[in-house]
Length: 541
Ligand code: ADP
Image (tube, rainbow, N blue to C red; front, side, top):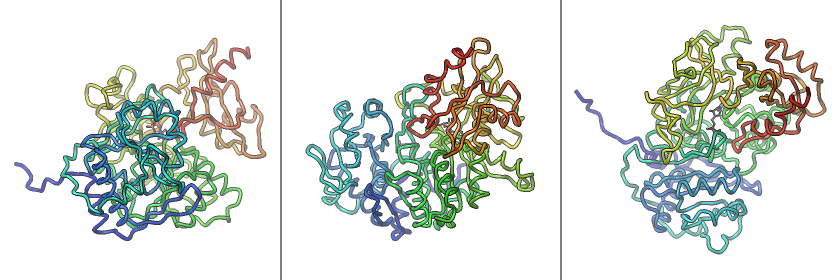
């Protein structure tokens, strides 16, 4: 027997009609390059999204066409997030931190036909524009206030020509809504095509109380860029809930972010560990300078949140961190580290271990880990294997059919993350498979060593990577960034680590660096460290 409920497609079009009907006065705040605040509302954003859809239609955008964005986080970017999918086209968020030739590759690969680009990013755009022949129109968002150059269209002028309403088509929920490319740390960037359905379900799951718990009364700050896995779906989750949205524009330095969180009474902010490491150092310097009492949670993901970061915020500033794991391929939220019933009675250290893990899967995401032969491993919290996931917002293939080996024949996606899983389903990432250190047949977790190093008072950041070794093949080397005015000897660091790890895990060498090299999405770029220091142990001999 079939159910007798309405067949109502899960599409982003509903986000627009809901916002217009229920939250027209809710605020959206965006920071401009000159640091002034631009204030608008949901009502105005819905109207402007309709104008954008009209303008794009006039410019010849057809169903399925890719409309690229090269933008910071701001209200016009949100307009594209909403209007482009709702008019049946596909929004393609370009990562402005990539090299121009990589951006060109990605834009060509996706066959972008129109691009919406911030005036403040035109310099970057001009470096690759000629390499993307599919681009027919360039819409320039005047974020920096000046006129659009020759050969481009002024976003505001184009919107001004149009009507406030658009006759959005009824879409199938399986239509593509957005394309995000992986950052290419594991080969060529690959396109992940989110559907309306996956985006809607993901937004609803993100809102659940045991996930991000987004509500109408939140003031949300997505620090994570809107070109990085849809800013983790935070703008969509916020918009669906009717929360106030606070968009940081290009100002992602700790001082600007803290000031914005204080002035806009931000309740929930999300970003990669680097951002929060910088913010914690700033707060430690002058704990009384900023009033962050409105903040109920800071979501950290993208790479492992060191336990010292979680305790540093909690113990010294009364701020709560929520650690989450995800990938571009998972829309991106997959797991989230919340304590379960009974765990709050555990000793502090055991609680921290859970909260610093990647947590357990959100509803509808399923997790397992397997050995090299694909055999499912026991959930004993100790056996390491590759994490595989499946669910309604997990990619089933890449755009163009590349990377087919990442999808198993029984319907799982191979994440490339090396993890343990425990009895309660908590995932703990020990490494990305390409970063794991294989010392004489034993695996050493670089993440575990990094976390322990970052709990040393002299260490601001640490990245552990594999150095080539004649006898053991690979041995750990640690690159360390000192806290301002502090340092420690190799022996001191080794003594600190020896409290937690077997002797063969301890790094064979330490190098002091001014900064850990990073990928375009803020992850440690260990290949660069290996290039630079990988032979250190061979020459040491
Ligand atoms: P890319 O795969 O191109 O680097 P993603 O942003 O999709 O870009 O990266 C996903 C990867 O980031 C995961 O596979 C994992 O290795 C890492 N990651 C994400 N969140 C966490 C986390 N909380 N802890 C540790 N690693 C994380």
